[in-house]
Length: 268
Ligand code: DGL
Picture 1 (cartoon, rainbow, N blue to C red):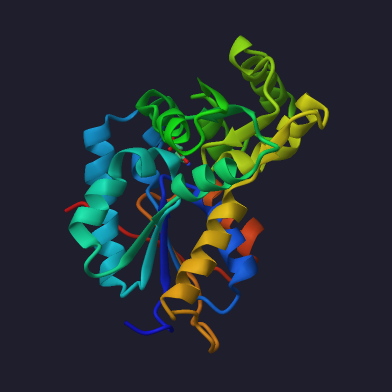
Picture 2: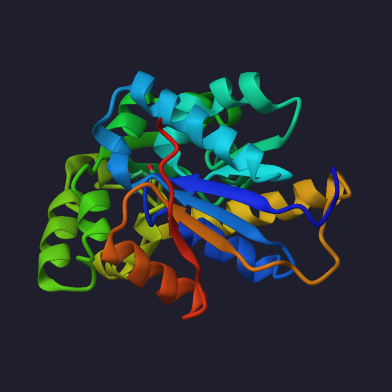
């Protein structure tokens, strides 16, 4: 394996771009290859079996692109497919999920005691955050709430407007989140509405930006593996399984005009 190989990143859609963007900011010399599975979006209401099968195909595709590390930039796929991807590919490529680095970060920090977690139905029903935090930090209180409308809403470009304000307010006023001091955005789409969430809580709740935590973890991992790219990276590449203009707009928003968006059918 060599340090100039790319980092592969995938999500159901634009959410993983928040992770890709955070990685690009702290590791500007790395080439990124992104796969947005827009044909199967949203993952949050799919069965664990379906999510595992999509993730395995995408993992294979990223491996074929010669990636040195694959980031499952989706909490839903991290909840259900991480173990399968490790079983299938860990002897060939390093695999990172977006949950473990966040759990470690929360466990290590005394300031976070009453933790709320919001995510897709599938992530929340899997109990992954509650279970992992129970082991890593048993003294902390954790309450989780499924917020299934948020990812499709964001994917359709509804954020920072009246519709998103109403939906966000309705979810965040749920009893599960009454007395929290910390809120984990356990869906990689949610950093796009972080400002609105922050405004709702009026700065009284710490919002955890998971993309940044995961990017730091990836940097440390590459340093440990001696795989940090020191040279000039090749251009990033962005693949989607179905073309949507909102994906293209969001990709341009994060990575500028010079993106190469390609339609890729990996399901046959
Ligand atoms: N961004 C994804 C996550 O982190 C999934 C959203 C969806 O496709 O439902 O869970």
